[in-house]
Image (cartoon, rainbow, N blue to C red):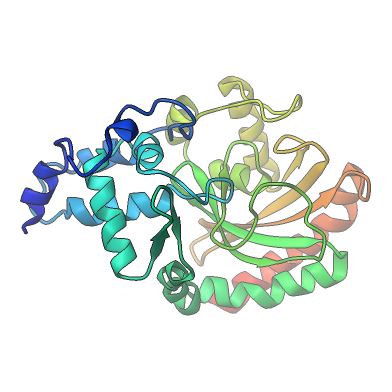
Length: 296
């Protein structure tokens, strides 16, 4: 079947989907801002763009740590992809060993990890960063991380974890968090020009995750301008109560921001002044040494 045929058919109701699932309107996962379906639709007219592949990737990305088991209706709601197309994507993923089902809900299988392993095992950035993250974690006895900007989120590409898990959200490699309320996110946003930054602040889903979260576009713009000027960022309990972190940029050979490094800690262990006086020099040294190793 051609991609065009698959794309057209997938917009029609699928008789194989039970009627009760078609009418389901409760317990749906929250929709994703700037839905995958809308992003895919933007490529309409490109003869080389594979809509079916794009939809399959979007279905995989619909699963999250707190939503490991999803129905067809929930995935369709999160992605805005028609349920018939979602069902076919899931059927294909199951046949290839990437997903499974209990008859009602669907979940991913470990084989999905192979999709990211090729990147993590081949990129010099993630490989080269690991010893530096381990060194930071050993020196400070806290988790150290590296992330890049992926859409409106930060994407964790390397991590040196501690035994204690600090917060409830997923911080493992491959995990994503909003850029606006994270220290690494603000470092990466500070690398944007003002026009791109304002566009991000207009489209991003800016929510108050705690009572301390900066979520007003103008306040965030001013904060990120300050981050750009000073070259580092502290976020104090804006992502989650009790979590405090500090981040610095990692530059490429031309001086452009390539990624961000950070250390996360609990407010009961480390004060904000200690982050700036003791943690910051260690992070800056690691960033400088990593840049030197990568680019000489």
